[in-house]
Image (tube, rainbow, N blue to C red; front, top):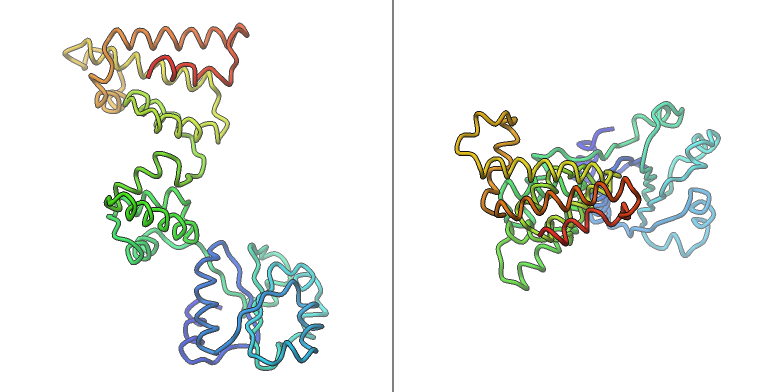
Length: 305
């Protein structure tokens, strides 16, 4: 079954006795469930399993109102084939089985392929459209928020609430507020290999951004020696760019030149040489056991920035 069929059921108010929803996008699923409940005048109730629902449905207290029952990840219904033929629905109620994931190789999914509805992650253009309805972000900010939330619409809505509150409290614009909250780690980003962004933040002399990106790098288990090596090479490149009038004869990758030259003037040549010495001191200390590995990069930040 496709989501468009659910839309048609909501439009007409003619619902099937039960549905099977699955997929990552739980926020959109909840929106559809709410629309179904409002259209049919159903009260939403969560039940642990179909067995509990069937035993409870025999009591008068459960049948006084129209209900839309939601059953999360019912493993017994997933594997007990005898239940499939016995359960056809409840009178005057809707049952929605929700599974967070689906192994299409299982007989269950083949049996209910005409009743199962997938709520997959929304595409970037659709997410951007929804985000702009919530708050006046520009396109770049929408993409930044989508990336920070890994395309999870439920998380996006929660983070937008943070931005709204910050904008109201500080009287700032939405795009600036979003960038600031991400930079300071208030809006959580999924860990990613931020090693080069981290090096750029250090050259920028942005302490909070550097620490946040360092934590991102640690989130994917980046080694301290690798971080120090990249940082050393970036400082070395910056020193070369600040000392030379013509970059063409330096033999540096043009991509690296374009990435580093934006930070010219943030450090004096003397400060850069000091930074390189501190980094080498830490690298040597790690290898000789005189510098705790977990403190090394923080030591560099404290002595360089």
